[in-house]
Picture 1: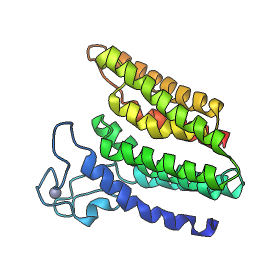
Picture 2: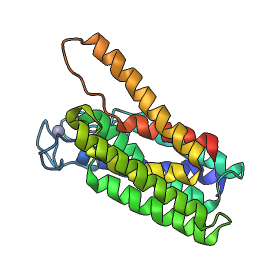
Picture 3: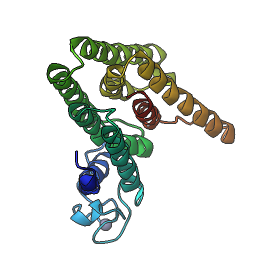
Picture 4: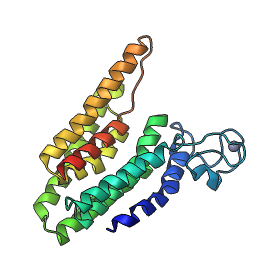
Length: 241
Ligand SMILES: [Zn+2]
């Protein structure tokens, strides 16, 4: 990958911003096609970094410039790992695919506490397919791919069982579906990356939840898990690759 061309990858941010604007709506309501304030259809201005309606200027979707900043950091991170020879081209494509879905998912979960199937399933399918390709064509082999798939199915399955047994106290089913891609990617980089990535996410989410609960003792506040699982995985991939 030509490092000088990396900044042009930021051209993907309008797509990511569109995914957040359309899908960051409360459960049970249709996907957003119009501005909540003025009712006009979402125009291309919504996908600019300021994230405002083109007609009434109301804010829609991800907070201004945050999504662009996170995407820039992710692109720089992947570029540095490729440049250092720590990610092969096919591995970097798998990581980039996961990042491309994980960023909107993190912003959607932070905003409305849900992780839509429309994003978690393609994230998982593409991550598995690209890692399978990396195993078939690269030096890594089938063993590493098998570990990744077992990790993805195992961790996602464990979270799904927790959800079904703990109910509202446990993680959401969306978290389990997010882990189909996230734990598969972590598993590709080994058991240590898998353990560190998941543990980082859970500890960070627990700490924030404790702070939020302490601040509002009267109110049961549920802190979304998705952004923390994604952040933990990003750190683990960066360290372990
Ligand atoms: Zn508007």
